Length: 315
Image 1 (tube, one colour):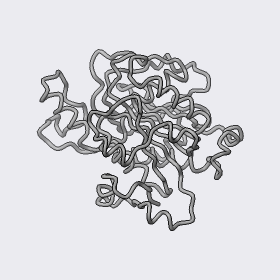
Image 2 (spheres, rainbow, N blue to C red):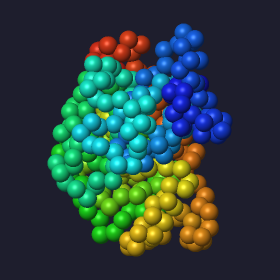
Image 3 (cartoon, rainbow, N blue to C red):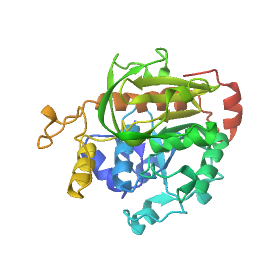
Image 4 (cartoon, helix red, strand yellow):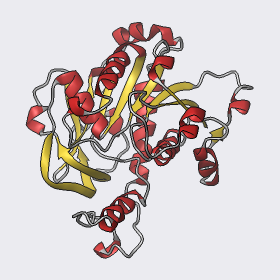
């Protein structure tokens, strides 16, 4: 089934060329099917790259998805044109009366700031609080996961001695996790961050379960009971070239940066990287949409609160 996105969104042409089933507004209007309503809060400066990467994953499932893009109103984007934002994005004040089956909060390059120092922190807190009553399942990514864990559970992030940068092997800690159903015993995930969250700070929080981790990159995935909130510390949505762009950006700017681990063939940045995480990334988002959204969300989104009370525990 397709992902429904605006007709002229740049991702439309890119995904169609990749044989991802994309449905335009015009075609979707002729179908008598309720698509899953998914909201994405895009906090990344490279918004077009991020919306394309996530649309690629959300659209490669058997489920029809209608994607709504949102940006913060308390921060002006320097890397994405206002024309693009006006054409394809909305703001919280325009959606806060709506209900959504799923919600994705992306990462953001603000991890070296204290949360309260982030320009849009107050707005983000309002959005995260709203998500607990207006969204069936929320999927937090990287800094978005750190922000969510801090807001909802008071978990603090810690600065690493050096950047966690590369593609790392992971395992499922909770073998029965539906989020990792069908995964290989070891799977790869990209990480790109200067901060982390200690496992010890997470293990004893009531209602929060560690689902997957990496010996080197640390805790990767956590979930609350029933999967209402899912936290992912890495970037499975990255395409094959993303870490390379980040590496060469810093090299060309004269910033100290190590070659991303397990990324370039023979650790040679002159060679084209090979994606070793694409299949697991697709399965991760497919499992989230299927087991934590589609299978349990109410047909009438106004009844989300009732559905939350009735759904059995699902991790």
